[in-house]
Image (tube, rainbow, N blue to C red; front, side, top):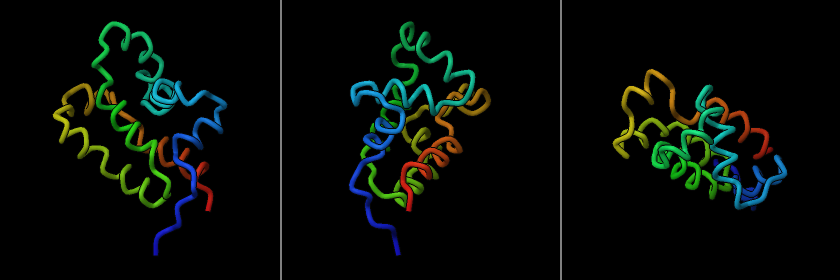
Length: 115
């Protein structure tokens, strides 16, 4: 028995919670949900190497349209597989943790998708 969709997407709920424009979602969510120190460095590194966080941005866009908490959780569990499928799970992702934080995603989604 799955939960009913909330009616609002993760993107909408995130923007309301953090009082940001919808246009800023990709940049702000990425910065909030990456592991440290990447969360701090992402604005600077993205200017120098625009493709460095391309897969993370694609994943955030896909997660942003989710409206159901259980569906969102199952997508979080598959993040590592998504990085591998995109061919982007090398040393910097695995050992230096240049990836989205599953724990942060779970915490923020639990707060946003209240049951």
